[in-house]
Image 1 (cartoon, helix red, strand yellow):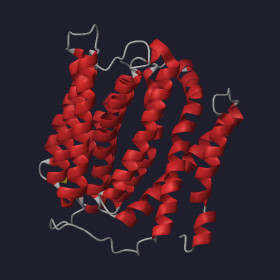
Image 2 (image 1 turned 30 degrees about the horizontal axis):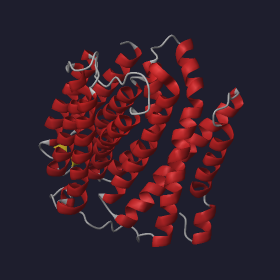
Image 3 (image 1 turned 45 degrees about the horizontal axis):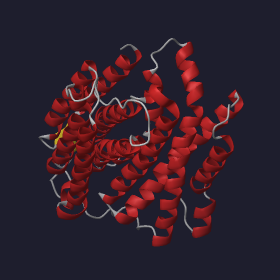
Image 4 (image 1 turned 180 degrees about the vertical axis):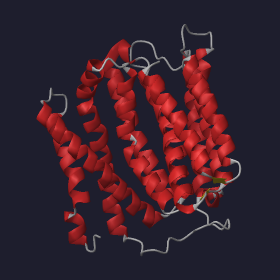
Amino acid sequence: MVTGPRAFLTHWTTVTPVIAVVLLALTWGRDLPGAVVALLTIVLAASVLAAVHHAEVVAHRVGEPFGSLILAIAVTVIEVALIVTLMADGGDKSASLARDTVFAAVMITCNGVVGLSLLVASLRHGTAVFNPEGTGAALATVATLATLSLVLPTFTTSAPGPEFSTVQLTFAALSSLVLYGLFIATLTVRHRDYFQPITRQGEVITVEGHANAPSSRTALISVGMLGLALIGVVGLAKGVSPTIEDGVQAAGLHHAVVGVVIALLVLLPETIAAVRSARRDRVQTSLNLALGSAMASIGLTIPAVALASVWLTGPLILGLSSIHMVLLALTVVVASLTVVLGRATPLQGGVHLVLFAAYLELAVNP
């Protein structure tokens, strides 16, 4: 455990994000040999663990649900910046990049992270307990955002293909911002207790009593280190992506697998943090992370690409294929049945994980 300011500043969780950003600056935009890619992969993995550590320090200082909100927004802002950068460099071949990334984030969080958290908590504690009011509201917002942004473009007729017209894209962007803003207001102001962990008797846990909260100075340092670690994770993931692409192509897999792998790397900090919370029987924190990340991914990405489309050339494909719409609809139905009672068994966790596995299988064999 880090016990003092000097020890904190020299701890590996503080040094690693700095090393990651330095390596990112030295290797950005260059063709990398295998040895360098291996080094970047090791630093990337260490940066993920460092990000989780600093996110937990900040969460312990500010409490829930602010801690999970900070991590979700931080990851998503950097992810959105990466998407816009890749779209600017990719031309027509990146027309569906925003759609694929957002949908991957939704499936990873709503099935992978939720399923794993429910399974870990229920196996360890008998059942996973959470607040159905807050979780249900978050799920309804995710379902609405996903439908408005990813499903409707497949059926609109104002523009050719699964695209929005300019007016429709503007409406989708504004709707995403409004809904995400309402969610944050509900999460942090009017109904904060809906999103706090609860005991098995249904009482809200407002104070974590296992340790003293870190000082304001330590928390501020962790905020900075969290930002650096996330920049390192996303940037290094982009750096190793050509190697991933070559491996996918050599294995004869579908190109969409590349996006899935990169999304998994980017979302690793939230996944590990959610599982750790589930092990401590704080399932509500896990669900806040999962659904909050899905919501932030849609609510921030769609307005960002709508704004970027002003200067970007080429089409912007947002509409999902029929297979993905079926997966999304099934995810919403299953998740609704999961959260309605406020408790779950290993069965519910397994169902979500099977849906996630189906998504991965269809990414490999569409």
